[in-house]
Length: 142
Image 1 (cartoon, one colour):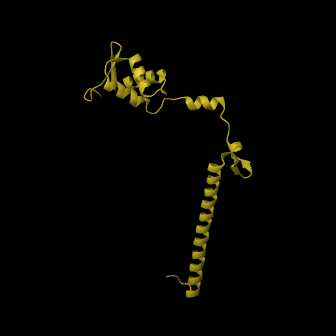
Image 2: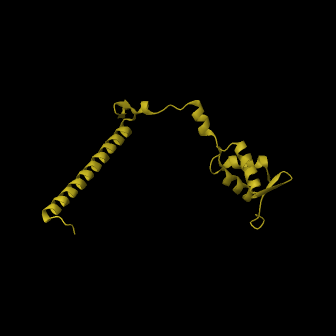
Image 3: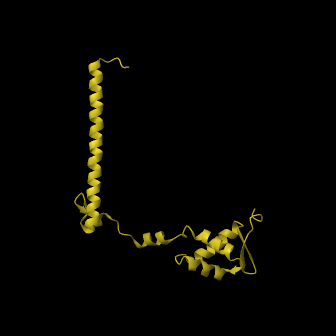
């Protein structure tokens, strides 16, 4: 209980209720504006504007350096794909592993497959004998 008079408590409750309603109204208005903007973007992609500027002008064009950086690195599934290929078909040569992986996913380049072979070998998850790759059995892994 507060030490305020009943009138002051009632006024405080009214003020709190008005604040809540104003906040909710602001949220509804914001959602309506986003919805209208999304509808405009879908209906007329070239005519979407933000603060009087076309949305196309707001995008930063990709530079050649950005494209190179974006294309670098191995796909996240490459390592698992190389490991599962060797597990399913033990005894493949490096070139055969590359061909098998690229059959599954053509976006994975040969140097990436070779890097994955090196990483898996360093982790002692696969081993090589006479140029052929084999999976380590679970009890052989350290």
